[in-house]
Length: 299
Image 1 (spheres, one colour):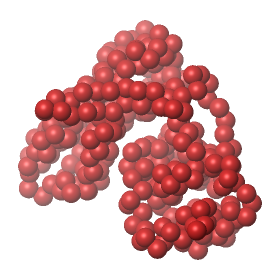
Image 2: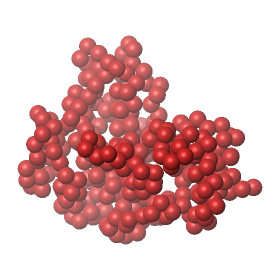
Image 3: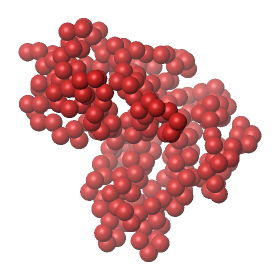
Image 4: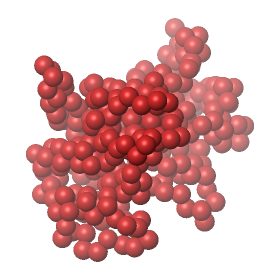
């Protein structure tokens, strides 16, 4: 590995190409990426954030490619919209959200495809990872600013839209939150939280030592289900939320695994990305879901 030298002197396009086509894996700092975004958006000017999001969307969609059998290559844009037909390639596990962030759709699709099809791979795996990590840092900043990016398709044309969420606090500072802060005030009592913990133990999310024993993505989806039901608060910075949520059960949300750290770890993109927010994949029956919601909202 080697560091990126003079990262702030590179334009957005120069840095993305440097990352993607690197001949070896770069060491990078989140602070470096944060400062690069800050510089090239004029201290997170909202109009500049929109333009940077557009640049990232164009780059990730057009430059990142997946190699199909017989060395055919398709970029993520073509795969997303045209689904190249090829023997033994499964597309059924991919879920598209028309009103979601286009980049999130691209990334979710790419990882789902490669996970479901052993004969597919990124053309530049290390480079793809680095570009996506830069995007995740951008998304963290956007979340904290309360900026939401979506797409709208009409008459065959795709429009990109940015808007402010109601949770925007007008500040760039990341506020440390506690586990209880994730829940609305009426659901923070010791009695309710004790019943919730007992439910998680009974349903095999936790053991009696308060340790997570289920798949981490499944555990994240439980939070997003509670958010949709109006039980947890709609806090915009999902990385901060997931670090607090998992941290309550002794799991550290990290950028990459640290083999010298004895604390259980989970990679951020697996619990803060769009695929983790698809709580319908929990596979809960109506009765199981009702038993959970009744803890917080008894009839």
